[in-house]
Each structure stands twice: as structure tokens, then as C-alpha cells.
Image 1 (tube, rainbow, N blue to C red):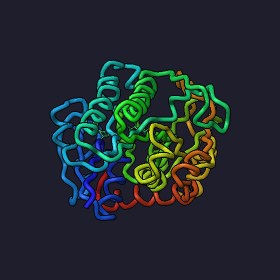
Image 2 (image 1 turned 180 degrees about the vertical axis):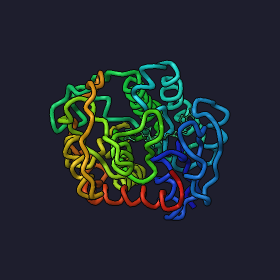
Image 3 (image 1 turned 45 degrees about the vertical axis):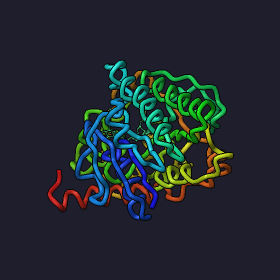
Image 4 (image 1 turned 90 degrees about the horizontal axis):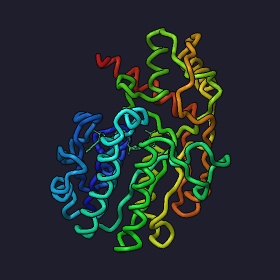
Length: 315
Ligand SMILES: NC(=O)c1ccc[n+]([C@@H]2O[C@H](COP(=O)([O-])OP(=O)(O)OC[C@H]3O[C@@H](n4cnc5c(N)ncnc54)[C@H](O)[C@@H]3O)[C@@H](O)[C@H]2O)c1
């Protein structure tokens, strides 16, 4: 039986990955400090180890005997990293290095690390291939790029097969609107449900290449099983493949939810990129992965999850 460790497995993306691993019969250990994750996200068939990903002892305990390590634990909010760069660096850069060392020492067969599209910094050609110049513009993005380099170096120096994923904006069930640094899709859905005007930063013409959670999970699984020679030491874009502007996104949600709203426009957020669009050809060629869930279908499923939560009395 494959033993898989998922750091950040109580979070939005990690917990869905855990479900998929349990479903296919893996023995799964989750390492999470529950700082932005939730215990009730964790599949009951998985073992939850509460601990900090930058704590070598906790990580070594969790990773002992692992065949596969999926490293998703991170401080994921760009704004938080601007406010607390050292905290973000400790969790993200030192955290990634700690996981890589533990995985190497445990003899893991593969480590899939989680980078971010923010490493491009908005200066790239569109659609953006992985070979585009990297220009991280926040402490978060710097920490993600540092993690990618550590992953590559662990392959080159120690022969530990590593792959990094660069997710663009991921959305879907379990992504919550109530955190201080919530993402745009849960915020829009929550506002529409409450009949409140959603907040749009700037003119709403900025576009994003949203990836549905099931497609993101499939990319992590593909990165764990693709031939080592094709992907070790490399990083891959993961996105939905059909970018939309925030105003188009809002219209799509209005149509699905049968509501009409007038958004409130605020100042653009400093450092926000105008357009974001992934070239997905490398992930298709090397990992055999491509997104399958279109935006409208993904939004429908996400709206349905919000309704189920409300039906179960969860705000
Ligand atoms: N959601 C997106 O659109 C997106 C885009 C690009 C990259 N990512 C990356 O994907 C990964 C997962 O993001 P998510 O959206 O699921 O966020 P999330 O906040 O829901 O998940 C992160 C998880 O990591 C845990 N964690 C944080 N710091 C930790 C620490 N020091 N030790 C142990 N656990 C810790 C949190 O409790 C949480 O469960 C992150 O690495 C993030 O940077 C996400």
C-alpha cells in the first residue's frame, strides 16, 4: 500500500487531495498546524498530525516511511506576506526545505511541492509558459520561488525526485469566504447569497485563469506518477485554460444564482497583476494532464456546495 503524506491536508486544496488519495486506497498522513485549515476538512480515514511544517522533528515523524509527499502547507495570502514577510518565509521557504530534507532522509520516491503563478509577477508573455522570466513581486511569491529552487536542487544534488506545481487561481468546494484573506470566487458567491454588493478592486477588467479544484487535484496526482525523466526538478502551470475578467465572472455567477447586483468598485490592490493566463502545454506533454471542468460547471458545483452548507446550518 502506498503511504502518502499531505502537508496542509486540512486546507482547501490539500483536503481534496487527501480525499482522492484515500479513495484510491493510499494510507494517508496529514501534517497541518490548523492555522488556516480545519480539522473537519480532514478525511476520517487519514491520520492527522498537528504540527508545524518548519519543525524538523514534527516533519520527520510525519514523513517516516512515506512513499509520496505532497507539500501544500503554506501561508498562502499575498497580503499577509506583505504585512508579515518573515512569518511567511519561515512557513513557506524554511517549511519547504524542512519537508525536502525529511523526505530525502525517509527515502521518499517523489515529492510534489506547491509553488504559485505569482512567481511570474505579471511581467510574462500571455499565455505564460514556464520558461517566462520570473519576477516575484511579494514576499509570498519570493518564498514560493525559493521553494521551487530548493525542490530542483534536491533532485540535482540528492536524486530526490521532486516536481513543483504552479497553480493559478484555484476555486471550488471548501474554499471559504470568511477568512481575512479570502479569494474572489467565495467572496462573490457569499455576497450574492446575502444580497450584498460584491467588492471589485479596480475596474473589474483584470482577468484570471481559474482552475477548478478537481482539476488541480488531478494535476497533483499526475505530478506524482509521471515518469521521473520527464518531470523531476521542474515546475508546471496548472490553470483552468479559459481566463475571464472579474466582471465576466460576476455575470456568470449572477446567471447561475439568479441574482443581479451592482458591485462596489474600490481602488485597485497594489501589486495585483492585470491579466493572468497559463500556457498548459508543458503539463500536457510531461504530466499528461489537462483541465476537464469548464468554468460554468465548476461555478455551479461551487455554488451548490455553499447551498449545502447553508442547508446544514453552517453559515
Ligand atoms: N488556492 C489557490 O488559488 C492557490 C494558488 C496558488 C498556490 N496555492 C498554494 O496551494 C497550497 C494550498 O493552498 P490553499 O488554497 O489550500 O490554502 P489553505 O490555507 O486552505 O491551506 C494551507 C494549509 O496549510 C496549513 N499550514 C499553514 N502554515 C502551516 C505550517 N507552518 N505548518 C503546517 N501547516 C500549515 C494551514 O492550516 C492550511 O490547512 C499553498 O501552498 C498555496 O500557496 C494556492
